[in-house]
Amino acid sequence: MQSRRAIASPGPLGQNDRRRQCGVPGVIELDRVAYSYGGGELFSDLSLALGPGTFHFLTGPSGAGKTTLLKLCYAELRPTAGQVRLFGEEVRAMDRDRVALARRRIGVVHQDCQFLDHLPLKENVALPLTVSGRGGAEDEDLAALLSWVGLSRQAEQLPPELSGGERQRAALARAIILSPDVILADEPTGNIDWEMSQRLLALLVELNRMGKAVLVATHDLQLIRAAKAQVQARVLRLKDRRLVAAGADL
Amino acid sequence: MSVAGRVGDLVKGDPHADRVVPPTGFTARLTVFTSAAMAFLAVFALALSMATGRLADRWAEELARSSTLRISAPEGQVAAQTAAALRVLETTPGIASARALPVEETRALLEPWFGPDLPVEALPIPQLIEVVETGEGYDATGLRARLQAEVPGAVLDDHTRWRDPLVDAASRLRTLGLTALLLIAGATAAMITLAAQAALAANDQVIRVLRLVGAKDSYIARAFVRRFTMRALAGAAAGTVLGMAAIWLLPDADPAGGFLTGLGFRGAGWLWPLLIPLLAALVAFAATRFAALRSLGERS
Image (cartoon, rainbow over all chains, first blue to last red; front, side, top):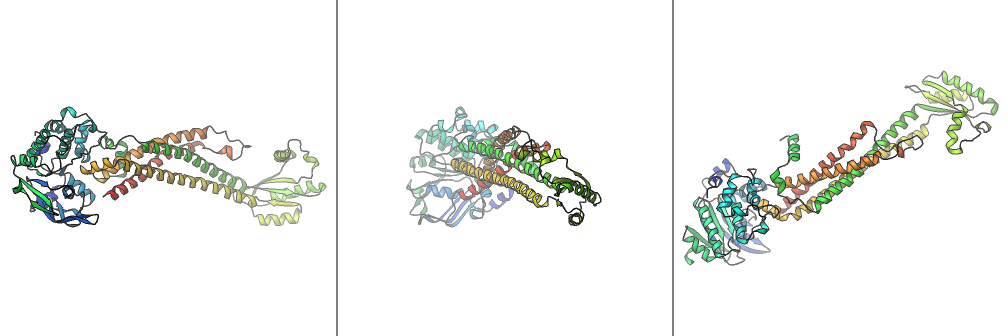
């Protein structure tokens, strides 16, 4: 990728936050986290540290809590026990503005990628720039980014006019436009064919090589095997309310 | 940032931020219509308040500075008692002038009730003396005592008995007008709050996406607040223009028309309604900001 922004380092949290980050092993840390809802415990005593440049896959049966775990990682949800730290800061101690600033350092790609359907693709991809006051759809890096994900021709189209694969790549472009430290992807290949999955994986691997931490929740074992051939990826499995290493199974 | 700076930013807007909320929807029409209707009503409430204010001031001023002396005497003594009363009045401190009303003026006073052909001379109608006070006024109790001694048929009416209820009624009407203005502002705020809450609920996906990409609540709120503020301003401006036109088209005030034809604005008073769109925008700003921040807080 040629984008200057993608290789620029400073995130929006500032120097103090960077200093706080020093000395801690992960940019996102879950420490003995439990999460319950509806009277039942989804998982407990779960610990995870996503360090800079790491690549993790998260697997597990449907309903095991993969999406919930990802939501805990970007403070969409708060744990019922334990601690979640984003860039060294405990989530419970963060007000909504701090959470918003932290999210600018975390790129999120959902399976059902949501967009602002009334805005063309380029404005949707540029949305993180817009909300952070760093520019908009006229940004010079945007064209390079759209070219990198293969969506230059679709720049003026509205999201409902895009195919599943195009939406996934658009979501990835939006997730990385601020050059985040971490990329969280929830079943990013769930709605697309194998060829498109490979293309998306190649983008994630390239980002990881740039030093971004990547966490991908997926059922797709083929995708994991393909990734392990290209990058040193750790596979974690949510099983029986616990998180276990599953690399040897693959 | 200063208040002026914030207002400037609000008016100028952010072309990027303005686009994140879909531009159409029933809440847009509801806000414009509500603001226009409320501004139209506000113009009338303001006109009522200002007209009654003028009326109260006029009554208070005119009636406070004049009194009436009524001479009720046997037919042969009316002229003598009138002359005696005028002499007493001329020597009373605080009275600027006093004059006996000629028959023509007495007839004119009675004309609205009895018609133009009333034979005033043939009726036992008391002689009326109009008394105009100086700025300091006179001692009514002392004057009554002198008149009782020197002019037994004279009755002094200093208008206090009916001036006070009239002025009080006019003042209450003015208060009613101002209360109506406050109620209109409150109703506008309530309607715009509901419209803003409906817009926030209808744009749930927009809010989720904005939060996902790191938008602060203040940014999201601002996108809604500016939109509703500008809609309220536009609607209220239209309503105000229509209201002012309606007031302007009312019949001119004339002495026979009394209070109703005096409903309107005079001179610089026409500038007051121009504040209504600004106040509507201010109310919309506060109501939408309150609704947006509360709604966003509840989603956390």
